[in-house]
Amino acid sequence: MKHLRLFGSFLFALVMIASAVFPAEVQAMVPPSLHDFVIAPEGVVGAAAVFTGISRRARGVANLGGITKMVLFADTDLTTDWPLQKDITLGVLSTPPPVAAGTVGAVLTFDTNTGRAKSARKGELGYQTVDVDGEGKFAGYDAAQIAAIDKTINNGGIAIVYYKNGDRAVYGTQLEPLTFEDTTDSGAKGDDKNQIDFKFKGSGYAFHPPLLASTVVVPLPV
Image (cartoon, rainbow, N blue to C red; front, side):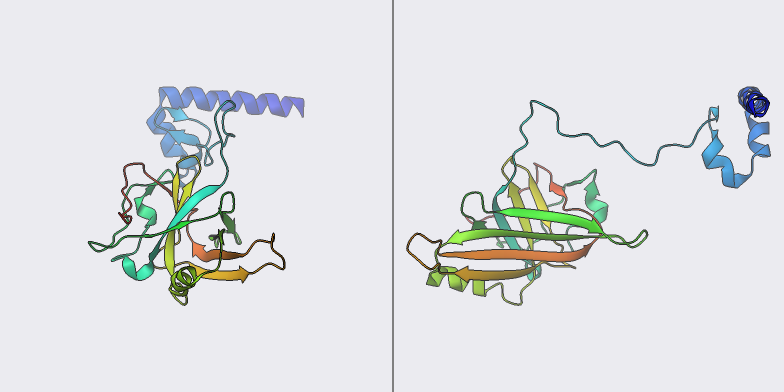
């Protein structure tokens, strides 16, 4: 076995030398199906890495959890599908929401430390998609709150989520809009929380929620 390993190493060394001296001739001898694995402009090499390494957030750098607010747009507010995968580069979306002039988003400001948003990739190899969901709680239960929530019944939309660290991410698309749900809870006694729990969910996306570039302006109420 040791002799076989030595012989294999000797053959590989010969191929490396030949590829450096006679690159065209060596490439002609390698089957086309193997070119991507063993041939490069500089000769015979190993295959290029497919994956990219992932590191945790650096020590000494803030990594705040939670969100401060959401901005909602109805799917009918958008004039074209958005966001599009082709407009996302390295996880960042640089195109603004394509809304008609004068259209502004609805700002949802939750009780402190009650807002969150999540995404999860799932599925078999070749059929994976991303699901999203999020929620936040509002203290109270009054007529103005009820009227605003009623506008989301059977209406789909998109949520721009504002993280505590200043980042913004887009959940949902016009083609696959989020659906909205809510529950109310009066509490049983005076110090219980009288509140509204607002939720969204969506599925079938080709990408995790992209971060909005800092240069993108989101139309908001004055």
